Image 1: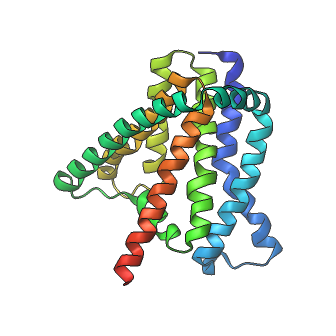
Image 2 (image 1 turned 30 degrees about the horizontal axis):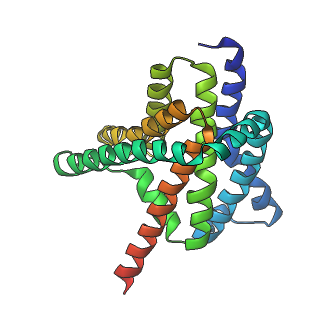
Image 3 (image 1 turned 135 degrees about the vertical axis):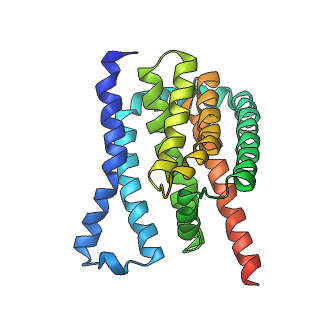
Amino acid sequence: MNIKKLPKSIGVLLLFFFSSLLQLIPIKLFHLDINQITGNQQLLLTIFSDSILLLILGIIYFKSLKEDFKKIKGNFYSMMDTGIKYWLIGLIVMMISNIIIGLFITQAQAGNEEGVQEMIHSSGILSIIAVGILAPVIEELTFRKAFKEVFPNPILFVLLSGLIFGGLHVVLSLNSYWDLFYIIPYSSLGIAFGYIYQKTDNIYASILMHMFHNTALTILSLMGGAMILL
């Protein structure tokens, strides 16, 4: 463990957890009633707080992000080839584990997924910005960049960043202990993104794959919702 980097990474995690408090600024400024906030308003509030958080993270990791950008320009296709390969593995594990949980552990519910789906169908364009663009960048900087600096051991980094990433997606919307089984599908993608970063040593590789994954699922969800409405 790199003790010198630990305070910085803890600070990034705290920023991630408490960034939603930034939403109080427009809520107070525009005198919004918290109990009557619409789906569109919630998306706008999320985009507001995420944009400020991303700006702060960009300042914190500016030098590293600049160096990684130069590297990916010269090795874009090879890095994306690696990214797609391990994303597909993570996606397959996620799908299989979701099917098994759905068939044999019927008490479990993906509370986080329900919340995301509700937000997505509030506004297509805003949800793509929030879920498909901002969230992946923030999550990769928080759970991959910050963790890799503290845990130089490749196996430890990939497992810890993936499991904590997956665990938080479930625990923060936990309805029952059965829901904990959904840590498996969420962590499979987290581990895949972590391995992509470890393999390429470039944060943009995992960011781009995470963005692709979220944006694709958001568009598919919107299309599915449109088909149901028709």
